[in-house]
Image 1 (cartoon, helix red, strand yellow):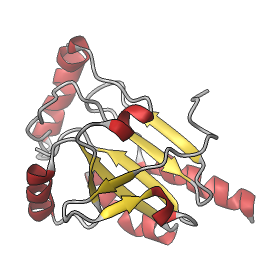
Image 2 (cartoon, helix red, strand yellow):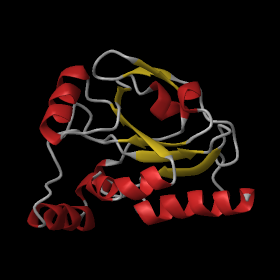
Image 3 (spheres, chains in turn blue, red):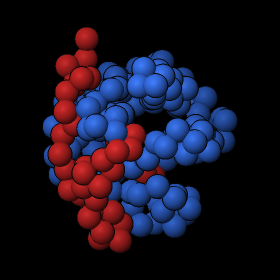
Length: 135
Length: 41
């Protein structure tokens, strides 16, 4: 999320609207917005209906606890960012969906591990390539 | 090949933290990035 926030200007320049989806409920969500000053809408997908509609799945216990994952979490903690407290579903994975102005999915990224996310550059390169095709 | 790429986005109506509904069609004409955030912490 921090990587995304650092690229907010670039997202704005490319007219990419961002919506964050949480499974953690309104109380935690409201606290998160207040604590972080999040400017993008934080939407509640508590029953995971949209998440499941996009085919996103849960991590296995091995994916959550293997040495590589633990090492990555340690690096995140040492970098000062911290992974955050887990919500009600520890096995929940993240995902990203990029939708073009005509409502077509142009990128669908399903995290296969708890810390795995696409780079913002990879997301923006999809937008830039599509915009170049349309010119 | 990801089976969702190239397909029409899933329609949705979800509320934000202020209870305001957000629909897929609200962002028609714009790129939209949905970030399914794992845990708010």
